[in-house]
Image (cartoon, rainbow, N blue to C red; front, side, top):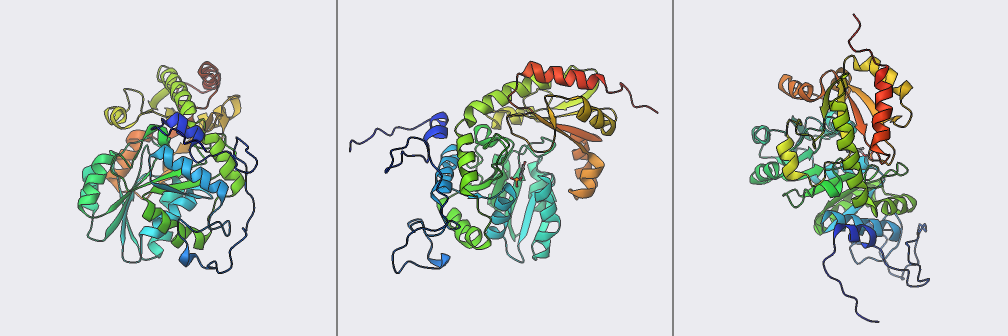
Amino acid sequence: MTEKNTPHRGLMTDAVHAGETPDPVTRASAPGIVTSTTFLADAGASFSAEDFGDATPYLYSRWKNPTVDQLEQKLAALEGAEAAVAFGSGMAAVTALLLYNLSAGDHLVISDVSYAATAEMTNELIPRLGISVTKVDMSDPENLRDALRPNTRLVYAETPANPILRLTDIEAVAGIAHENGSKVAVDATFASPIGIHPLELGADYVIHSLTKYICGHGDAIGGAVLGNRKDMAGIRKEVEIRTGGILSPFNAWLIQRGASTLPLRMKAHETGALAVAKFLEDHPKVTRVVYPGLASHPQHALAARQLKNFSGMLTFQVADGANAAKILADRLSIIHYAVSLGHVRSLVFYLPTDEMLRTSFRMTPAQERSYRAFAGDGIFRLSVGLEDPEDLCADLEYALAGVPSTTPR
Ligand SMILES: *Cc1c(COP(=O)(O)O)cnc(C)c1O
C-alpha cells in the first residue's frame, strides 16, 4: 500500500478524522458501532485486568471496545493529550480521577464553585473515605497558596465555573500547585477543547462532560479524563475496569459523530452567545449579564488571554428571579426551560443563590461574597444553542415583556 502523507493537522481535520479509519473488511468510510461484549481470545489470554496494557487485544468491552477507542483517540487529538479515557458520564470521569489520585490521609483542594454533583461529592462521599477537602476560591490563585498542605495530592479547578462563569488562571494555579508537588486537574467542560487546552497551560489532567459541547446534540451522556499515557492507563486499569463506569459503544458513536463538528459548532455558539449577551445587556429589565466575551466580565482580561473561544454559556439576572423564572418557563417558545447545556437547542434554567448555597456549596463568608458578586440572588444560566441569534433575542424579548419591571412589594 502507498504510504500516506501525514503532516500536522488542524483541529477541524482532527475533529473529523482522528481515531477513524476506513473499515479494513468492508471498506466503509464512516465509522460503525461494535456492540459485541466479548471478543475471540487466544488460548492463554489473561483473565485479570492486572495484565491489562496498551497492547492487550480486545477481550471484553468493559476493558476496551473498538468504538469507544475511536472516540478516545479523537478526544486526545482535540485536546492535544497523550491519551483519553471515556466514561459513562462526566461524573463517572470525575469519580475515577479522584479515586485514582487520592487515598485516605491525602488532601484535596477544589474550587469552592464547581458543578453541583462534584461539589456535593466532595462535601460528603470523599471526606468519608478519609480524604480531607478544602474549598478554595481559585479566581485568586493566592488563595490556593494558603490552602496547600504537604499532603495535598490534587488541586481541582473548574473554568469557566458552572454555574457562575467565574474563571481560574490555570497557568498561575498550576505553577503554585506544582511547587507543592500537587497534581492539577481542570474541568473544562464549559470551554470545550476549542476554548482552552489546560494541559498546555500546565495542568496534569483535563475532565470533560462529553454530554455537553463535545456530543453537542443533547442525546448522549458521557465523560472523559485526559492526560499522559501512564496516568490514563492507570485510571483505566485501577478504576474504570474495576468500578465499571464505562461508556456504551452506542453513546461513544453518537458522541464521536457530534465531536466531528465541534470546531464549527463552537464558533457558532460563541457568535450566538455574544449577540444574545449584548441584547440582554441592553435590556431594561436585565440587571446583570455575565459572559466571558463581554468587556463587562470582571475577568475579561483573563478570558481574552486564556480562552480561544468564549463558548455559548452566559448568565443573566432580573429583579425577583424566582418569579421571573415561572414567567420565562411559560412564555419562552424556542428556548427550552431545562437543565444541561452545550446542545444545539438553547436551554435556560434559574439557579437561586440561597438554594445553591444550601444544597451544593459549603462556603466561608468571603467565598459567599465572591459568589454573590457574580450571581446576586440568583442567575438564569443560558446555554445559547445554534438557532438564529435574532430568533433567540426575539424569544427573550417576548418572555421578558411578561416580567414586572420592579419587585412588587
Ligand atoms: C454536566 C457537568 C458535569 C457532569 O457531567 P455528566 O455528564 O452530567 O455526568 C461535570 N462538570 C461540568 C462543568 C458539567 O457541566
